[in-house]
Image (cartoon, rainbow, N blue to C red; front, top):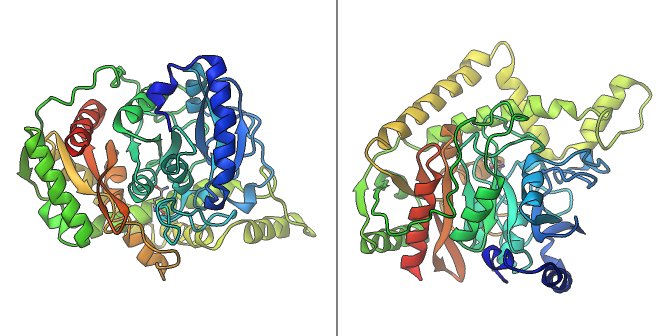
Length: 444
Ligand code: GLN
């Protein structure tokens, strides 16, 4: 598959030919179930779009029955931005329902298959976006990351996935899951393409009240893999990861040393606190965000005798099991009797996590961390919701603290890719990309 950088040099007729060819390839790989729908928005380099980002005139369902038939009435800001840059939406990709999950098994369209091993999950929730890039049926894709949903599927499928600083990319037109955590970001074939796509979608947007109104400097034209950086490694973090992850971690450290970076050991609070704080926060926000799906304003509406019955039947029939679980738990932690004990406490822990990263970043430029405790797992292997939540242990701290991070393939194990992530300071995406480019180069 050609890279985004190469595609940007194509002439219009060449892009049209490329798309025809791409359609054939997509058809050949239908069994992956990675695209929900293949549609061409118009002239431009085709980019795959996760099904929770609005494209004017296209159905947007967040892989949920409750939104079936809902047509987006406007473009998300990121869509307008890619159109302005000569790119265009080409197909909607599969995902966990409302981006809640780590395996793309909870979609109302059925699971997506990992192109590297058909018995394993592609990761989630942006599993479709990662699978299409890894399978060579998309040049690049957009995903969203609330607690790892760009970085973890990228790691499981063997591509590059980047989560920008909170506030860097507009959330306008992204179906909200956990509004204080959500960010849209690129999934690509390599680090440079990630920087290019990141540049295209970033910047202040007055339509998003949490968008950061600060100066934006392009990163892709300033990439410098020769910078010597101070990179923190976290021994107390990786001791619980699988052997394949630990091996990849050692390999990455050696490669970074060879590139001339300084490696120092840092200590981060036990990541089990991240899990608790994240799931309380994300579920609380999800329960309020998803209250809008009432059968009146969007998509699916159940037959009923009166309004109250219509609300409850629509929601009972429209939402899947995991989404319902989160609405219930989220409502519980926000209820007056438990608000202080759970929600407020989670916010306090979130603050501690943020402060801790801040302290570590006084001394280092980047932190090297696993993305997941293991390589892509088998379908159905996570037996309980808690087991699934625990697999997010390495990614969610970054969202709680609002930091930028990039996941890239570092090693292979059992024929599957092993990805690791580099985490950076707020709004210091330049260093994140420089470090990642240097690591990518060293591993070639
Ligand atoms: N797996 C996490 C969750 O289920 C993260 C999902 C995401 O980033 N959208 O909440």
